[in-house]
Amino acid sequence: MSSFVKNIIRFALFIAVQVFVLHQVPPLHKFIVPYLYFLYIIWLPFNTSRGALMFIAFIFGMTLDYFLKFPGLHAAPCVLIAYVRPFIVNMLIRQEGADQNYASPSATSMGWAPYATLVVILTILHNGYLVFLEWMQFGSFFFFLGKVAATTGVSLLLIMITELLFFRKEKFRTNTA
Amino acid sequence: MRNIFLFIRRFSNFLFFLVLQIFALYFLFRYNKFHEAAFMGVAGELTGKVSERYNTVEYYFNLKKTNEALVSENLALRKMLKQNYESPDTSQRFIIDSVKIDSVTVAQRYKYFDSKVVGNFVSEQNNYFTIHRGQNQGIEKDWGVISPTGIAGRIVNVGPNYSVVMSALNRQFKVNSMLKNSGEKGSVQWDGENPQYMLMKDVPKSAKVAKGDSVITSNLSDIYPAGIMVGTIAEVIDDKSSNFFMLKLKTSTNFYNLQYVTVIQDLQKEEKLRVEKAIKKVQ
Image 1 (cartoon, chains in turn blue, green):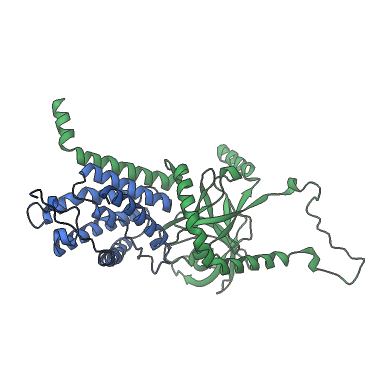
Image 2 (cartoon, rainbow over the protein chains, first blue to last red):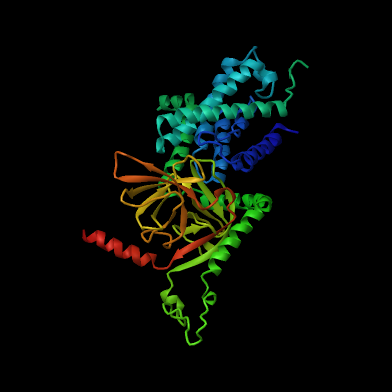
């Protein structure tokens, strides 16, 4: 299956899971909102250009927003993590040229520790910015801190489960066939 | 000139990032104020259709509770019927004399439309739900929405066949209500904590309040008729520094399994607004 088709299917699946599964779970506490959907942006291939990455993230975020009837709230954090992702990937990549030898960021292509760092940084950025936008309209600083901490914890847990359940084997590609 | 192009080329990614951010934030803040967003009509139709598919499954699991709510509403309405009252004295007759039978529309103030809920969310701070009825079926913006057991929300965006309703579980939603027993007024709002509780503010301490008392919409409410259930008092928070009670209400509507709602049209709303506007102009 080509990477293009695969990513289109993933797009639909991530939105569907976020809207019809995670957002249907009765809320445990006001700080806990399970966000998983932005994992799609982390999983996009290495060779996506930065402009395309941001554009896809914008469309992806807006799609979720139109389902939840709140345009812009999730699109802005998605664009932010899409903009930041290449910087962090370049910083964390283990050996020279791993971003050319492998298709997309994962535990096998980057190594467990660098990949976990990437996921943690992007999750904190995404949730921090998202809650910041909410905090600007209402809420106290305590709301901001508590919600960022709680949503990040839940997001990381969900991402870990997803990574374990859907383990992606990345093929090593060389041009010296 | 050359330098400008070089600058744009060099920072094209950053500029594109800024443009997308500005777009997103513009959408967000504009929507917060006016509840209008670009493509909301088209997007609403599409997401509505998808949500409706999902709802056919979800609805099945909520059938029992939906049924119970509708039966209890029916029972409450049946209790109001004239036939319930029968006097042994046959010379006595019950007559409803406040409504002109042959020209009901003259006295009628509220009109009701039934509607199916598709796509309902409670986990955000600002919640909205979609109903399957829109412009083509005669719905307009700013009409009230109630569930079989109490208030549910207000229409904020209307598409051809689907409308977006601001749920009562929204930080921007406010409804003027009163205590059923004594009639003291106050405003009810959601504080974002728990979808089962709302807060009622500005109730004077002279009011007699007790746990379990009913709170209903007041006649000052812009969108609801007076007397629609809002909730029951779950906790009285006595703020020593002010002259007002803060009441924690248990919402009468169960927002977790909202399936059918009624949309309310106020036929005299325009006149009311016009008169109020005229006063403001004079002042």
